[in-house]
Amino acid sequence: MVPKEARFESKACYKCGKTFASWQGLRGHLNRIKPCDQEKSAPAPTTRRRPAASKTCVKCGKTFSSPQSLRIHMNRVKPCDQDLSAPTTPPATSSPTIPLMMNTEDVQKEAERKARARFQARKAYLKKRGRLDELGDPPSPFNLSRNYQKGARDAAPKPDLKRQASDALSQEGDDVETSNIEPQSEAKKQRVHEEQPREEEPVDSPSDVSRMTTEAKVPAPSSPEAPTNTVTAEGSFVHRSNKSHGGDLLAGGCSCPPCVRRWARKLTNRMQQLEDEVVMLRQKKTTGNESATSTDNQQSPIASDWQILGSENGRLMDVYTHINDQILMNEKVVEEESNGHAQFLVSSNPDFSRQVDELRISISTEKTKREITVAALIAREWRPRRDEVKALLENSPAHNSPLDEQAFHAKWSQISNDVSAKDEVIAELEKRMDSLGESGASSRSRYAEMGELSSKMAAEYAAKMALESEREGVYAGLVKSSTRICSLVKNALL
Image (cartoon, rainbow, N blue to C red; front, side, top):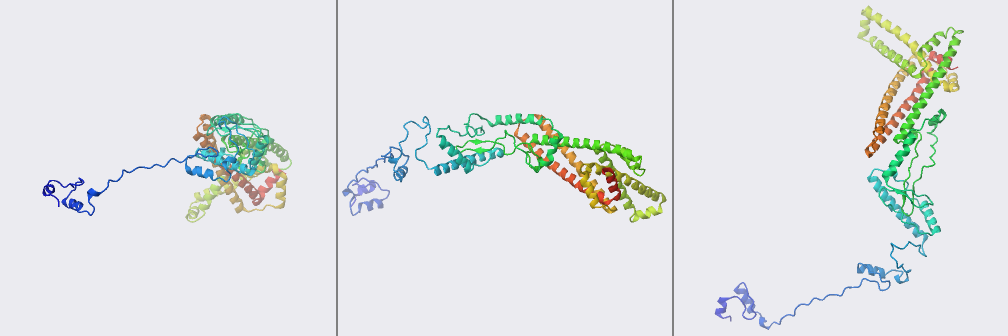
């Protein structure tokens, strides 16, 4: 039993000295089967530490970062003590040597893998900066195997050919090691300076310019200085341009701003030369017509009208376009006045009827002038193909078809309007291109805008040439739909 004085004074066990929160806890502690004073003191816990396992190979002496790496090293198929002795000098000071035993296929696969990895890394870098045109061709097994055979044959140490900067361009040949690596900005400046003399080159002779019409079939010869894209097995990327400068812009030629301006300049000069040749031929033909009018009275009005029209092809085209537009507009007015309520007004008003009759007479007179003008224009265009036109006129004789002739004249008017619109757009694009070229800035946005303008200019030139070819079909249709136009063209050509 617990003494009364201890019961009221504290709630601590008088045997072991433990203090409890309640009398029930103390009572339960004192009523234990095994008294608390008979318990043996537990020994103090001791911490046992495992000795650190060695991570060093006992055979070769290599030290690893983890026991797992050491275990993998020890379980190799080929023990490490059978490997060739490693050089005692550090790798940074010793030159790489070719091992005595190597598997050609494994080395070639490893070279291909490294070249592909470097190619993908360079592709990602150039794509991020919008310069994928500088990427070059992907590595091919043929180039890699050839480079490996050459390296094994030389058996000489080569320096590290990895890129020193992200945008450096290595310039190495097949037998010459890398000797000069320049930043890309300097390479761009060099290319710009090299392209400026090309822009100032004079136009070649007419025979050279005439080759532009056949460049769509024959690819432009590559410049002897144009390098090619190669990727070596060591990871050295050699940037070369995929497309050679020059060529027909409509046949997939180079579309850089200098080439577009040079192509447009050649085309303009060629058209001017053709116009000059046509003017000379027209003058000769006019002289021949003047001598022929003394013997043939029926052809004298035609020859005199042709002399009035002038000798310039552009002026002749303007005269025909003006006459044709006037005739089409007047015919539309007459057609509207001959239908419905307008016809009643014409019949009831003599003055109005007289004006309509005068308009019809004017249309008939203008049609005669239009036939002479269009015949002269067709003859000027077809003069270089005189034999072909002669065979065409003999095989398919002309017949009078006023409706077809009217449709062809309307189509010609539409084509002329479209060509004029294209000329205005091209002139505006050329003006913007010249303003960008004279600005002198070298920002990336300026080059991007010039490339966009050159693409638009190429599209406009293509559309204009398509309209010109469509106009050729109108020529043949007019000749076949009118016997008078056919006879005028024959007299002018034959």
